[in-house]
Length: 220
Image (cartoon, rainbow, N blue to C red):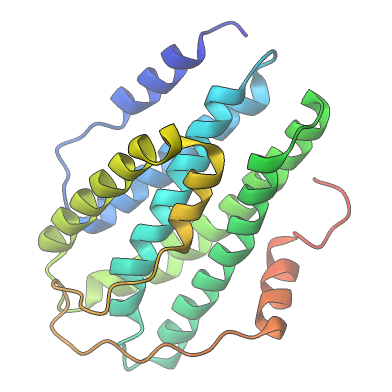
């Protein structure tokens, strides 16, 4: 590697420090941060375990935050397409979690790890595009206090980061486990009632695979 892993992580962290604290900008910042970390992983050679661990941690925490605090607000929309979009986004998270768990458990050659990370990259790319073009604009249209939601997001992320550090010294399995935490029943930033969660089916999961290209035998 031309740069140390710690140097790369610190550079990315500093690059995305900003004074924007509303929920939409915080989520978009997370997206840019993960995209850059993945690109660094794919462009680097040598031992990249620490960088891989950071990517798994960031994605797992981000998914948990969205499922706990953001998607319940969208599911309260009176627009069926918005509710469906939130459901599909959570299904995509499910597919991503499986890919992250596979990556975390992998004891593979650098070539195989790169292929697995390319799958993660493609899943993230699709999910981010859908979320930023459809769901986040709808979130801005709700009566949600986006600054308050932003505060809740930051607090929740800090809580999950502390859990990573204290749970088995942040082993990979504990990073991916973060994304399976149960969702909050009460979302303080939302003024409406949270819609009851729909049960997920194997069919919708298969659709998520197909939609993200995860079903392909080879990474693009």
